[in-house]
Image 1 (cartoon, one colour):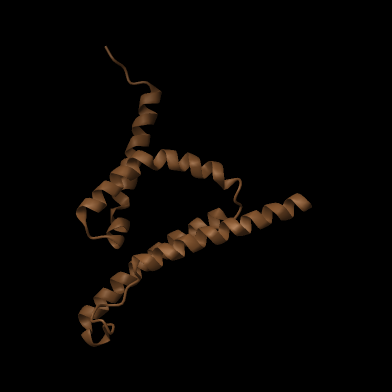
Image 2: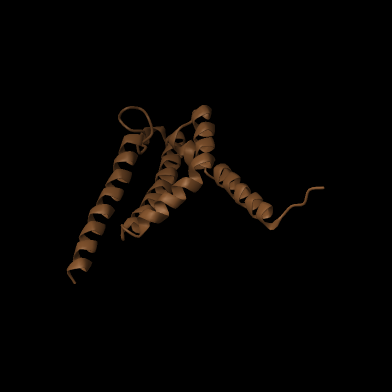
Length: 138
């Protein structure tokens, strides 16, 4: 006869939280791509790599003081981008005269999004290095 130990229950809850994260992140992926294949495969890889990425990020957080602020900024930017893109599409449907010169509604492109994310991370790392050097001198 088999029994469920407390370790099994903990593992079960961890895996359920991974699954909830993957389902919860589907709208975020849909803001970047409408391709169903990309949406599902990115969520599968998120489930597979989430725990490893957490431990890697947790280890780096002590070296980079401002990284948590950059991550907060990135999450805020992605939320604003999702709202802006949806609002722009909705306004374009209601008021076609307000469409951009290309005939498409205004939106924040993936290239601009990636550039802003890289900028957030780069600036936070540079400020963190300067912060660490300043602390070492004191």
